[in-house]
Image (cartoon, rainbow, N blue to C red; front, side, top):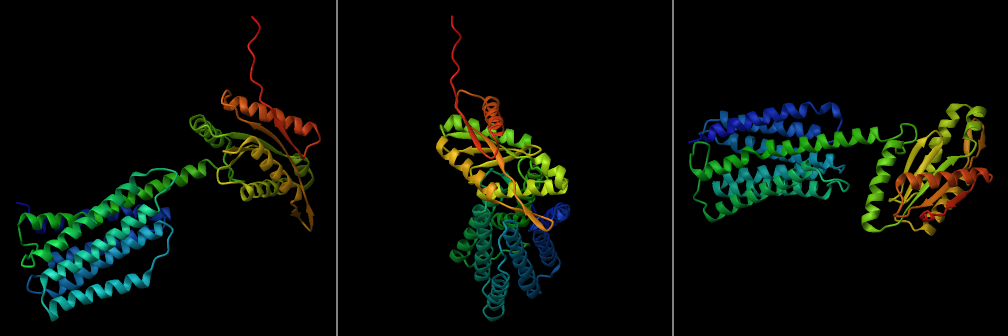
Length: 391
């Protein structure tokens, strides 16, 4: 039969392995990794305390061991909050740990109640695992489904249920006493449950961290470094996905191609540094004025594409004119003076009969018309259904 002490040793080895994996993520700079590292260190120290303390010296495993385990779960919870961009309630965590240890000490040295110590420990750890699951669940990414978040949430709630069962068991049967010298099946089940707590949660944290790093890398690769608008490739991919969505949902969609008027003259007169500043200023105006459903991409040079998803033809026209007016009214500081610039746009409202390439061609032709008509204006392309050639 498997030895309980052997299970604790295996747990220590698992913790050490996960500690090494987490250590490799320190350079990522992700919030929460440092706290997760410390949680594993504290767990290792607690296991060492349990395995090396003689049974006739109960004060060490009761206070020091449980204190280290309590601090470990507090630290892991703090890491989950930091990873989720939430503040860490340091004072409540410290107070909860101190109260937990004070109750355990009272139930050992004032009134020796083994079963109640187990119940209190189960409530404390079960509660924190519930908080961990709740934190990850509430802050699950909305734009994608990630295995790491789902695994960590489910595992944390499963542990909460396990601690609840253990607590209820000791309330109903206070005569039960388990320790790592007990080979009973129930004791092995509870020890196995405890053995996978921090390693299992850490595995979920590592997967979440890996997903965050991958997402950040994809975000950097898909953005124009100067303006932070989507790159041409990313914008086309996004527009294709939105067009497919519009086919399924029947939602309207429009494409606005934008061009900063006389941009070459700005570069020639003031230099490329000022030209770059104009590009950044232009995209800042766009991002501040756009709706959440809109998407801006830099297609090349001073030309941008704006996808207006869910906007009717009249709404798209109104949005385009509002953006043009905002750019026209804006001024940018160059040296000791101020200057302004304008933009031209070609707007095409999508029809389900046409492809993205055809929609882009219509918007591009409308932009060409806007430039030819004197610039600083929006020209709307009218879709005409292709007619069949005469037979």
